[in-house]
Length: 197
Length: 197
Image 1: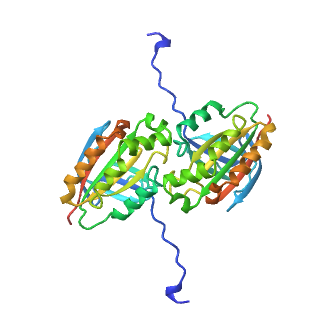
Image 2 (image 1 turned 180 degrees about the vertical axis):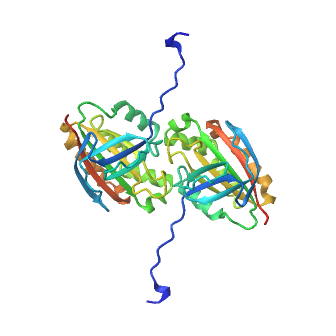
């Protein structure tokens, strides 16, 4: 058996991520703004690590989320998204945002058809996001089913180039003006810049 | 201020549950049968406790799951379900089943419309369940987003009276014959009886 024909075990793609705010990490925190509900403390840096992590000595806070299956996107939308989107970690994408949100009990009491109606038919959530591809890359992390005591329901991590910062603001403005945002009772907008070292 | 007008804090409804197999607990295990994939060890008893729990000394295994929002049910279906279903803990419901299942990677790669199509249009999952209400009470627990290493995606707990055992078998038979079950690669069927003491 040659090396090339050796069976390989696929490397599992990490699903659980920890966002650790403190004095270390490649992302320098520029601001932490409460859009709705309680704020989150600012800190010098954020580190993003795969796994559950534990809060290091001297760190300020840790938030966890897990990537999961899509809850609303339909096949035609998915095909368009996949054809347009780019991944995290692009060299030019030196700006990032971490936006934790929590939805209301009223949202979670809705049925699937009602949530999809608000998410897409009324709010065009996917269609708005598509307009900013590939400039704005994102990864959505779910928190609500990690356990019963999570402070947020979702953590979204965005990456974009400095030249696309205005476009990113437009994206947030459009989403926050949509009917879906009536069901959000806590939102914090944390802006980051890749440390130049 | 009288006692009656004192403000009260609503008691949070538990969402996270632990199923602990060992030598204690009110549910006597009658069988543990692997329907697909790896089996789970039999044990004398199962205890169902709210919270994350820790595996007690001498216990055999512990499985955790969290109740969550519905992923497929639409409003008309929900209204019918709520009007017909009964809760857990009925005095006559001395039979129980714990059925952990795991769905395939192919299932989780489907979009919402594709999963709903298989779940209801092809498999009538909700309609089948409705036929056995109120005889069979159930609580669905999600595990997949508790963390990246859960052995199952769902734990369903069923309770019914001994006289409804044949109906419960019919329910399982109908679900297992449905197209949705082509996406299940691990399933264990654990039967329990309330200890008479």
